[in-house]
Amino acid sequence: MRLTTRKRLAIILPPAFIIFLLLVRTMINDSGDQSSNHKDDVDVAYIDDTSKVHFEPITAVVKKKTPQFSKDDLNALPDNVGKDLGEGDVNPVVPVPHWNERKEWKERSGTYPGSLGRAVELTSEDVKLGKESWAINEFNLVASDKVPYDRSLKDFRIPECRGISYDTNNFPTASVIIIFHNEALSTLMRSIHSVVMRTPPRLLHEVIATDDYSDHEHLVDGSLGRRLAAEYSGLVRLVRTPRRMGLIRARIFGGRFAQGEVLVYIDSHCEATAGWIEPLLAPIAADPRTVVCPTIDSIDSNTFSYYHGGGGSAKGSFNWHLLFIWSGFTAEDQRLRTSPAQLIRSPTMAGGLFAINRRWWRYLGEYDSDFDLWGGENLELSFKTWMCGGELYFAPCSHVGHVFRGKHPYKHPGPGPDNAFTHNARRLAEVWLDEYKSVFYASWPGVELIDTGDIEHRLELKRKLNCKNFDWYLNNVIPELYVPDGTYYGDEQLSNPVSGLCLDTLSGSEGAEVGLYPCHGQRGVQHFALTSRLEIVNANSALCLSGSASSIRMLKCHGKGREQRWIHDKGHSGALLRTGGDDSLCLDIGLGKQNSHPTLVSCDKNNPNMLWKFGSYSKEWWKSS
Image (tube, rainbow, N blue to C red; front, top):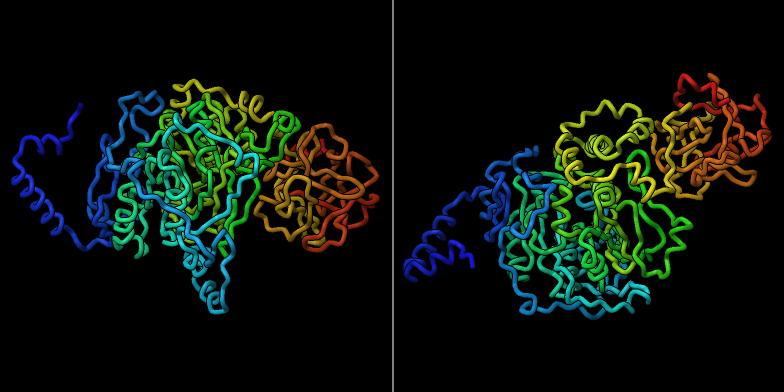
């Protein structure tokens, strides 16, 4: 048995001398730099070397505040990433209480604000204070602070899920990793405590609360570290990044300290519910190359009521801007589903909440550490999971609530989130899309000007893992995805020059009526392109404009023409758009009001309400007429 240095000393040195050494160490620690804002008197972890992970008092981490991130601080990709780590790969040992020696936590009983997931009742003064403090966290902090961290929640699982009996004897243990930056204490503690309270002790190895260099007083004054140490006795570990890293690199950082067999990532404003962990671990126990995501329910950002999302009705997909979108089941999906409790085979993950075997995570190269902030990392992990030998699923029987916010309340290091996503998306396309990256570039003119940085190490990882190509992924994992040929006759936006209104999906999903909205030039919901197949495709949703006498909707592209075929003549002030289903009918702005819907009426080239113009035209636009 290998002995640690501390154990060797305990054998060799007399007890009195050991006590003397401990006293000297205490005096040295007490005389350390007291000027830092971080004053935790419990150890926290940080990485500052390419080969070691250190555990030091937090004051050693933050003597110098640097807003920018340096790759040398993270060492996110060690030399052996991309290879089997083997049994000898051991993370730094952190004392964790044995599962049968832990305190038992129970939900708070009775009726109180937020009990059983109910909405918090707010007084007029609460409403006022909530609005005043909203910008701090982009949710109602007053309401959140009224909800205890051990609040009760209903069992949101469907009967088919509650009836499943799991044999957990051979289940892997989980390290739950929670990344936060300037998170409100009430939401952070509910996230942590809901995991501890609702996870069977034998399955929970630890919780790693990873602070991405917060600067709010309640997170840097030492009180959080003392509270976690006192309340959870080593089960919850607080680690801090040496400087602000952003979500992607902070997840890599936090994952490096995990000792559990499975990493479970959740956000810092979540609540785990009854029976949440077993459906995530069961598939991984059967095949360590499986990645599993829970059903994500919604916690209202104003009242903190818990809304059960149901789950089991959609799977993950993506558009050619490389954004995650939800997609309905195909006929084949429906045929294969025998129970609403069955795992949902999904081409992509939403990104924030998932479980993955720790060695599989490292084998796949974690996230691309040259991604900035957040965005695109979910698709990167999705693509390489499938292409490199794994599978990805959503678990309808696992429910985790999440506070969805309108925007991020904090400042970002380095590039802003929009620039970060553009950078990440181009790296993603260059590494994983192979020849299909041309479709990405065609749907996003100008993105090719963004610098990707060095991608050779990621391409080398892909080669070492002998991953399949993207054509295989499209044909075997998501064959229903519409793949445009990359030739657009018209692009950017589709506007009616007279009214100043643009065709707009109005953020509707598949099957929703298309609408009209003032042109904003930001693409997205107004990004329509006329392809060489004479389809009008919304690049944001990858759905096609489908016209009928009764309505005009966004539907899956079927490539068969008819109601999805559009004939267009270029004109300086606009031109008719005739439907292929009946070329005597043309697109008309109808009422011509914001949020109203266009219609199909008898063509009249002299009617300005029927004249449409794309933001740009290719040299071959004439082929569309």
